[in-house]
Image (cartoon, rainbow, N blue to C red; front, side):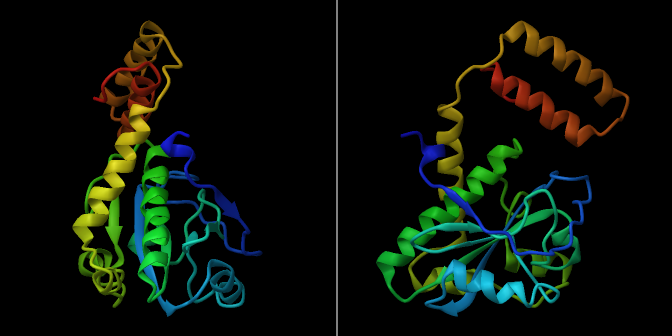
Length: 224
């Protein structure tokens, strides 16, 4: 089995959520925020049920425990998970909490896999405090929240934020190694030249750069 197929993302969307695009447009998230729920022995289903009646206060995109990854909000639109500035940029991923170390490790592995998967889908590199953020980092950057998760919870199980960065990076690199070339180099480079013209004209440079890298990936070329 390929690493990118290791886990399934189950979907059970909360009804009637607002559909507000990210600041760069529908589906154009710029990274992820990693959270911990602060509730021990909770489950994705239980957290989803709670948010069904409390989403006007806050909601995230996913909940993960040792049994599943549950997506409760559309990745194309923002959630209210870490303050306004973070919300308009990032997906929000919650890690359910447990005192059981074995269950923690199983949940943690799903959680870091998910972050790598989300970044990979948008051709976003794993960059600490830029594309991959803790809630604490968002609090420190923008002061729009007082939360400091998931740092303390990770420490309870012997993990540091540096471990999250490394483990997400490891999965991301596995995904890259598994890629199958789907476009010949010549065709990809022709399209890249067209994109370069748009880039040099100052049009949507971040998105043009991302699309050019997607073409490089599809044709088996190194990212630029």
